Length: 254
Ligand SMILES: NC(=O)c1ccc[n+]([C@@H]2O[C@H](COP(=O)([O-])OP(=O)(O)OC[C@H]3O[C@@H](n4cnc5c(N)ncnc54)[C@H](OP(=O)(O)O)[C@@H]3O)[C@@H](O)[C@H]2O)c1
Image (cartoon, rainbow, N blue to C red; front, side, top):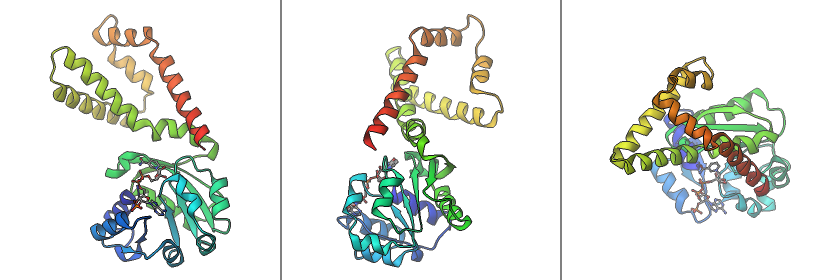
């Protein structure tokens, strides 16, 4: 995720490579990232925090507790951007009590190619400057939307888990097609391109998704048969239950 952010902001010329520092636990990934992008590897986390105005925290959620007291003090009056899944503002505030502000972000994996969607919530109402900085950094990953922290579990289910749902969906369609005589690779390609085209059509349309469904279906036609079978097999209830399972797990983890 850190690599996606750094590459994205450099590609969009939002910052100079000389403006950005990075550090990691072992030093392996931060050295590699510095080599690939020309940003500066810091000696250690304290050095990075002292030298920076804005700090992006992108290690695993369990590493948050490894922040030392001196690192926490060095973050005084700085803006902290956390992409850690499931770590609430409350727990981030315990670690960085004197930060200028803290923003919690939920990105998703298409961020790697600049096509992600992120949701974010600030701890304190942000200044225009901090809001602009966060939105411009997130624009390097794709689009971004402000949400309330109480909505983080449901957006995690929708956009955080969403890529896996679409990948699984394409795989299941391609598997079913290959059992019926179509090459799996071709079926995957057809499903991907159908997904891309349909989603783009939906994005450009001012109609609701269900109205677009109606436009594709003719009574007793092939699509009608497919959708009727989905409904008979409780597809809506399955989606409802799986979204709830994701929300429940997100709540448990945080
Ligand atoms: N991937 C996603 O789609 C996604 C989506 C939403 C949120 N997130 C969140 O993004 C965060 C990073 O996920 P990821 O998938 O990018 O993980 P990752 O590829 O495993 O990267 C973790 C990074 O943390 C570094 N690190 C390990 N220990 C550290 C320490 N003590 N101090 C500083 N850095 C340390 C690692 O570097 P070394 O190995 O060199 O130590 C590595 O560069 C997670 O908190 C995750 O919840 C990820």
